[in-house]
Length: 627
Figure 1 (cartoon, rainbow, N blue to C red):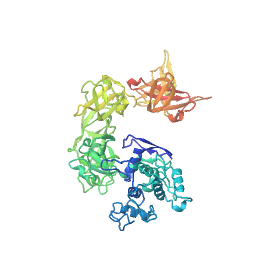
Figure 2: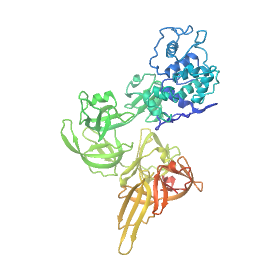
Figure 3: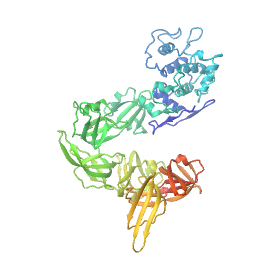
């Protein structure tokens, strides 16, 4: 049985250390610890140390057993009776042992004792875990524990475990046994065990959905500010694991007005710095029972009771008020603050300017100029402005205010050049901030894309490539707007038909191209581009491009991950959005079927890649033809 965790840019970034089992393959110990911690089964000491090399006693294992059982919420703080002579009511494990006995999960020895301080053997632990799955002693024939151990192996409960049948288990053995249990099936229902504890956390393939599991373990939110750690139900300190906007950081990186969530068993905090400022335009479905609001032209769900109250007819905010929304991990509104209290400038590129209708706090309609921009954080907010002299492609800075937003053009503060370091942390001698926001723009077509720093690794940045940058108080680059460096905002496909006429009486051009199985035709009038059929680049509007150009080919020998190796043993990076086509030749001509990259890897296809420009200038393989 293979344990796999599904993730979507997992909020936990861990170095996973594999543990090889003598009988059962390889299991990631920290992956297992991550799951059991999220389930509050095995959480470690105050420093998060699981002491995995240490032995585990029968009492300790029984506590884990009950934490992993469907009765985990019913264990009391104290035992009503002494479950065994050597487990008095005052024993720390008495409540767990008593609950396990009542549930039928554990039994003592023939002399009537439980021996809580004894190390537990693998056979004893396996027997208890099989009872969680619904197996009883009557299900096994032959001498104990031969039947139990055979089933243990058949169910894949042995993955990564090194203990022999009658030897003492380590805490790591116990960790892996309970982890393996999560994707074993209950005997009576055929349900994956983890779905019994937390429905919907294991899919039909037996894969653990870690995001869904973490959602069951995460609590909150609270807004960071004076004394905010008092709201966290565990001691927050240097040992606490902290993430801010998905990046592992130290505790002091959390800023005032960050929205913070926590998991007590994991002793982990997740903080988010996501804010939207503008005019409160609508409250839906009503102020009597609001569930969502619209600010800056976008609707947001209300995530917390506090946010719901603030927008209700009993709260502080009304339609027409200037507000700043503090957004939570799912993009909903966790809290609301006055606009004057949280003034936040937004930088980006204008996408459109239009006249929109709004409603003021008294219910009266009015018209105002609205500017929508693509901000450096990737959002597309809309703001009321007093100045409409801006066109798509302009770079602006917007400062929201109660009476509308102030909008100003961005000016380049100075020259920024240099090669981006391989780890994407420096441009020449200039350090990129950990939370740097990067936007790569194509101003002619008013298109842009947000960029990860790692995407720029190895690219030499020239003066002409930088449209704007800003520094934070530490002198690090916090905002960066580029001029068509990556090319990732453009379209790539196949130029399938070229019709060019050039004679003394007539000059005309018509070009048909396939972009991911969508056909477009562009008539250029009295202009020809001198292009050839084949993979192409389309910049700007697909119906009337700013530029249409052919790509450069390279023969591909093999593909490994996102790297293509040419027949000359040169490596090329394949774009995450690379368009892959299978070339089909038949009596009616040449056709191109748009497929996935996985479809053509490892088969009998001959592969050719097409790139837009050298990698040192931001280029990548954009199109792959398989024939």
